[in-house]
Image 1: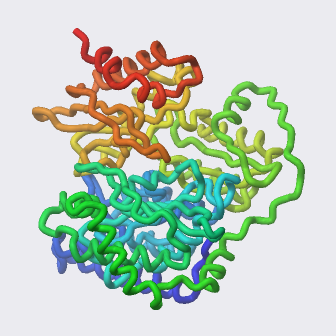
Image 2 (image 1 turned 30 degrees about the vertical axis):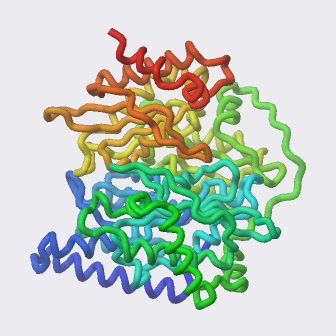
Image 3 (image 1 turned 90 degrees about the vertical axis):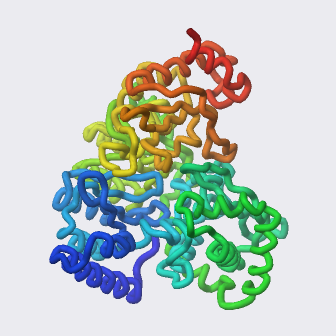
Length: 544
């Protein structure tokens, strides 16, 4: 992974000192909350329903064991003993004292971490495939490009005050684990017709109040032109994006207002003007950054043959491990979704234990997935039993990756001042309801948001749930048929919503209908829904 140089270290140190002064001025009453707000947002500090929240950047979801152990320490020392991993591969602390946040940032700097640009109208944390550098599916590790984008965009003077926040995701595999078509810019690293590496560039995706899937603006962009082309897109957006209405300020609104052809024409004109200047990506710089992501020293061995006598271990192997590019190794998904648990939460003790697993069994690496789980990317197959036993001892050996209980959920009204309804209790109750049948149901992505901002990605859930307010009470809309993968689709609202009790029953009715009508046990939910259409599910939900 990337390591700070002297410039990085000094830059972050100065930023912490500046924010410490700003916090002290706020605590002394020299700054009002309105004056303090833009300053704290530039440092990842939100004011939520009950307390301040600190969002910590985890670039492209990659952590070292030392960094994860630091997060565990911070959870224990400054929060309530846990952290929340988010759909943007970041970590949030929901209960820090404002007076302590400069100390937290100072400790983060000790392990080459910060909270810069995890909020505000700028380029946010660049996300990537959580299997990057480990899966044989990819044409190359996409993380060096994510790191280059991160360095280029950090405190960029032209793009620090965009019309609205801006999100970039990148993948290099045919199976899209990064949901690139839901991003402002989605990048698919691929092999071009001339044999070199380059990108398919998607633009204008996003969820929230007005969901859109990204559209393909360039199919074969040479890697040397990556920064120039992103720069051209951002310049067009920065010049023409709306600033008079926060709900119409994202690039997706601009793109769909003027049309892809007109937007592409403006971008290509700007790109032609700047592409041969300082923004061209030098091969030497790409090689320098790529060296930080060189594969670890894998042992050269034939694939180990596993004979799991324990059936729960065998089930975990099937659901929570994936093929590795190196024979004898596996990729391990650590589910942060124990049945009835809070999606994405990990205690300090659990983080410490996973940091030990990463150090001892995963080449010192941990990944955060956009599905709010953790990943050990490089585990020898001969060590899987030991890893499984350790995870079981800390309550994180649930064999449910991709199943109905592997639910994405935002913090909702339990924490967030923007939320209309709670997400966490609904996720817990659905998890408990469906757990006995989740193996029979198979792959099923349930995603829950507590408000229209869609932090729980409900628009692209196979089953999506949106919390709304109805006559002063919590209410839930049910959506079906979405996907954030390579077959991306926006889910459709089924009809009238449900109360907190009714929504759990409604999800179960949808699952029952699927099991009754599917074309055999191998037909996945989304395949069946696309074949059957919405009507059988609506009939089951709303028939008198």
